[in-house]
Length: 105
Image (cartoon, helix red, strand yellow):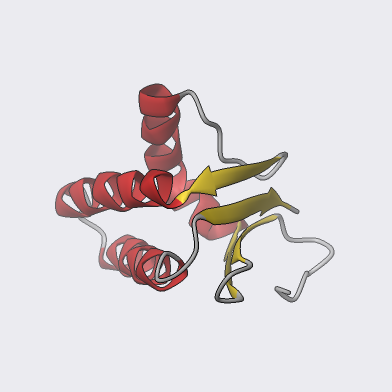
């Protein structure tokens, strides 16, 4: 489980098949939010810090594709690093299994 700072807002991504988990914090959420909004417009599925959702691997691959496109447009190197880390974590989490659990915390 991700270490929860009681003050910080986070979203955790968890695959119970390979037990891989990663979290994004409030700063990362702000940078990644346009990706989540684009994903919501394409699928109707919402990722945010307030709810829980179970996603199929195909959903995560769509998020990865949106993230890759967004990365090409990003100008700030610190934001690019956050997006690249997010893409890398998606690659790890979709390695096995069919479902990914996404929880706002």
